Image (cartoon, rainbow, N blue to C red; front, side, top):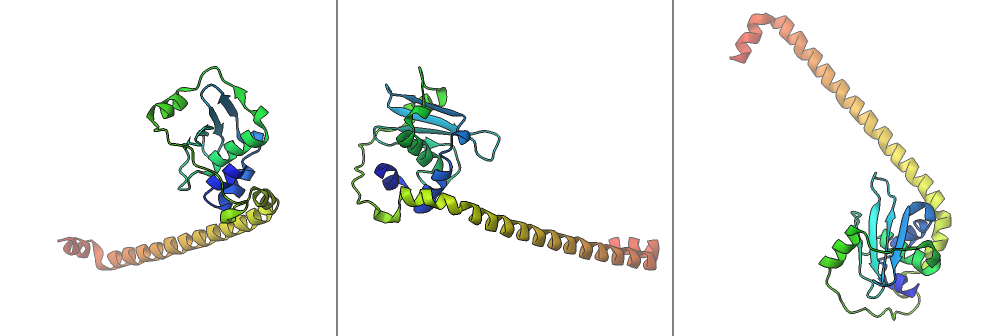
Length: 188
């Protein structure tokens, strides 16, 4: 677990990873002890799940999500599941093509020591687990902010459309007042 804390880019990533450790988020979890790899597919908001692979030896990883944090919450969650419930992983006879592709392209690096003091860097798995309890409150506030922003966008759009329709009415009225001949003279 200390390795996961050390690899996490920040506390928010650990908290997000904590919420992804539920089995229902991972339709596929597999491992190869021979290759020293863990991989899985995490169902996100899109139609295709994110593909995640982790090298247990040097903690190399790859995830197909668009996150700008490295490692991402999906990678941290996969490692977390492996540390807490290793029986969740099915033993695989062979790795899927996307895992083999990653293996063929990556450069091995020497393992980095995870010898940070507990709580160093302000990241804690215990705190991430506790944050999960307050996530519902935060999510309710986020939903309210999102709905308020959506209402404001709707009002702004309606106002802009109304103004454009008023301008169109004025233009049509001007064209009718000037007559067809006036319209033709303006176009020349």
